[in-house]
Image (cartoon, rainbow, N blue to C red; front, side):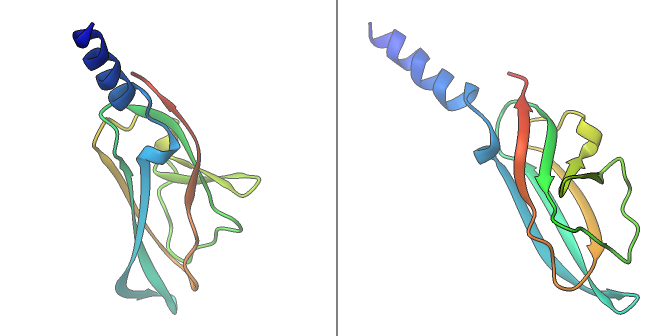
Amino acid sequence: MFPHYIFLFICVGVCSCGLNNITVGTIRSGVEIKGKPEWNVVVVNNCDCPMQKLVLSCNDFQTTEPVDPTIFKPLGNNECSVNNGNIIPGKNTVNFSYAWDPPFFLRPTFVTTSC
């Protein structure tokens, strides 16, 4: 019976990844683009499992610096796609920069786990 509990604990810790396992960090780069401060964004998959179809809230997102749409793209409805919906491997990051003032509050709203 004891090994069964260990398996259950491991499965709960590894298999139940979701929005709470996505971290979005934004830091000012110190550079200005067309008079707007540049922000470096790091999206982290803190799970061991790959995640895909990640969507962030990005209310009224604007930038004076072009962002590669395969990395970060507005979808409408104040949501943006990360990594073109493709897999973000476990413990990996996706990075991009944009320039605007003030910075946007980007938070995960949807993701699927492949585990």
